[in-house]
Image 1: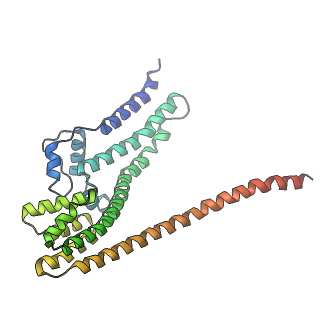
Image 2: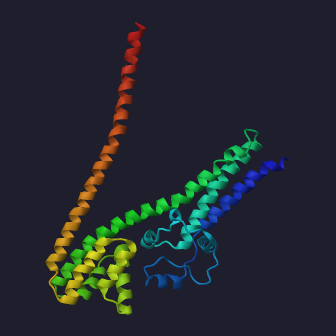
Image 3: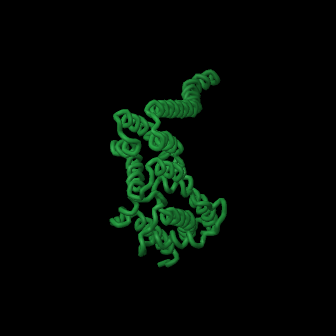
Length: 293
C-alpha cells in the first residue's frame, strides 16, 4: 500500500473534525449570560474559560500587531453581540481552512498522478488572506442589517414614548414603559440598558445616548435628547416626538424605495440577456434555413 496516498485523507479528516468541533453547540454558562444583561460592551469571556475558542482568540488578540488595516470593528461587534474571542477564532479557523484545503487537494492530485502538490498549494495563501478579511465583511453586513432594524424599531419607540407622555407618565417612566411593550431584540436591548441605568443611578436619557454612541445608531440619541428636555426642563415633548417619528418613518420609506429601484435596475441586464437568448433561439433556425436554400 502506498502510505503517501493516505496523507490527504488524514489531513482532510483532521480539518473536518476541527470544523465540526467548532460548530457543536456548548452548554451556556448562566453566570456569563446574567452578566451580559447589564452591559453593552463587547461580550467578555467567562473567567477561567479554557475552551479552544478562548485560547485561540486571546492568543491572537495578544500577539496580533496593531495596524490600521487590522483594526477590530468594535462598534459592529457590540451591536451584534459577538465576543472578541469568537471574532479572532472565526478568522483563524477560516484562514486555516483556506490555507490547508488547496494543500490537501494538491496532495490528493499528486497521489493520483495528476500534478505536483505544490501547484494547488500556491493558492492557499491568497485564499487564506481573503477568508481572513471575509469575516470583517460578514460582520459589517450583519451590523448594517441590525442597525437598519434598530432604526426601524426606534421609529416605533418614538411613537410609544409620545403616547406614554400624553397619558401623563414622567419622562423616565415613559422610556421604561415603552421599552417593555416590544419583544424584539431591539426593545430587549433598550430595556436592558434602562434597567442597568436605573440600578446604577444614571438618567435613562443619558443611558440611551451612551448606547447610541456605542452601537452607532444616532436616531436613538435623538430620542434621548428630546426626552431630556422633558425630564430636566419640564418641556412638553409630545408633538416633538410625533414629528420626529414621522420624519424618521418617511426617511426609512425613502430608503426602501431607493433600494427597490436599485434592485429593479440590476434586474434589467439579466432580463435583457435572457430576451436576447430567446430571440436568438427563435431566429437562428430561420437564418440557417435561409442560408441552406
